[in-house]
Amino acid sequence: MKATALGFSLFLLLPLFFAPAMGQAADDRTVAVTVVKNDNLIKLCRKYLADPAKWREIGKINRLRDVDLIHPGQSLIVPVRLLRGVPVDGRVIFAKGGVEVKAAGEGEWRPLRLNDRVRQGNLIKTGRESAVEIAFDDGTTLFQRPDTTLGLSEAQRKGETHIFQRLTLPIGRLLMNVRRATGRDSRIEIHTPSATAVARGTDFRVSVDAKESTTSEVLEGGVAVEAMKQAVLLKEGEGTLVTKGAPPLAPRKLLSPPSLADL
Image (cartoon, rainbow, N blue to C red; front, side, top):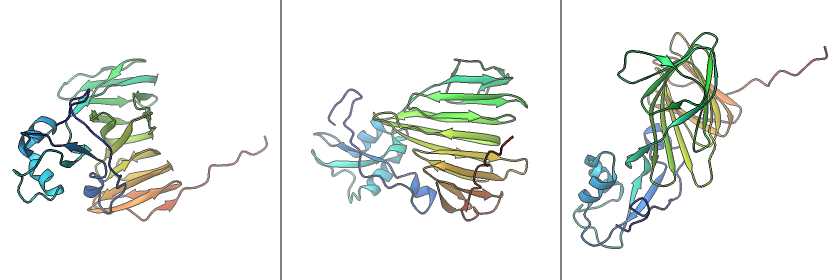
């Protein structure tokens, strides 16, 4: 494989943004690797995939009749989601009231303060009158409102240009501002007890109530929301509600912001 600063050559293929189902939407970003002498599929997957056992999936995606027969100069398509990632941290740029954090598997919460680092695997909790905003190096920020618990399950850079984040939101309200820094491509997944939202290059908010119902609202861009193996695409100014155990409702227009009246 041709070497670069990160060890291999990557180039973006045409994106397939929102597919009909979320399982397909996960495959929308791909890179291509160039085969050189003495390469074989299993060796390449062992070196560059987060899970080398996915070599069969790579063979299927590339329609290889014989996974042992790849030749120098051949390009193989690899979904970004399968690449081995490098963890990236977030930084607290705003904190109000009692905000706490703990690493996955730890029993004690500790205070989270301005300029503290937030790492992959952290759980973040806000109280009744507290809030926190966290920024990542791709320009993405998340604003966690009061009475919200958030899990940063995954935050990684994959390849040279891709930032991938997987968040869990068991209860509370979250506002995402997804911004593409120069040369960077971001993908955000938010998993709630009743739905999954996937977004790229957008501003949106997600909330989960005490009954584990999920509300998703798009302020800019587009978000795909899936539940019960059914998906809807929300455009700018649209929202949907997902009740636990039910598919998403059809997208509905958001109410216009209130106009200011004379005092």
